Length: 286
Image: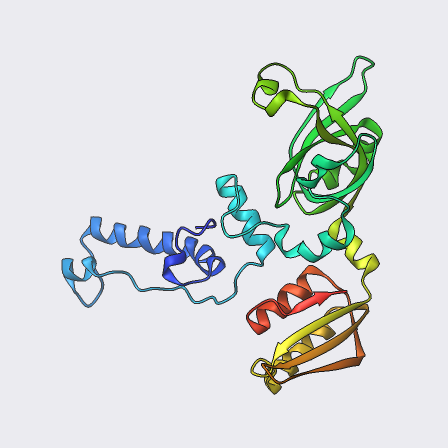
């Protein structure tokens, strides 16, 4: 259910999940009635017992994108409806120097910043008894190996294991491949990996650099009711970023309005709530 097995019903996954306990109790009660030959005070007999149970899915709230993807990964080991990094596409362009794919052109010892999700964490001890960790940094273009020495592990371990988008800064090392691993790669050339120096949440990097949140709406979206909800929503996320609103008339004009009285925090929760309110991606952080 958490991975979408019942999406065909058109009901929110969260609402379906929250009614599981009630459904199990209802099923157990019906089974008990069948076994005892009791089908209700006013009769109905076996025919009533064969009727489908009453649907009791009343909730309308859905999990956030982050929660939905995390539950998909937990259930299946991979994502189905998206990728946690997809909503950070603009942030990746602004703050990363390379993608995992373009790292192939990086030079040895070059300083880089790459955004992604850390996967496949493993540790071992060096000959001197110090801890060293290895992992993969995965983005929308591929994956690259990470090497994390003990001092960096101690400083960033919880963040590296948090399964959320991060910006990894470090130095490129050209790793030799050997044995079967070398045979599986073209010409067995050294592959770039990152010796990690610093790790930051991508949301924290955005918050530190952001100056404004921009919204672009069509005239049809910009109803008085929706704008009132938007103002209320902004009030729940106070911060230092200026806000602006552009209303677009297709093929005609675009009007940009600076909302001087409202400053917000450019958080994931705010951006997701704004996009849900207008039924699509309308919010941009600058």
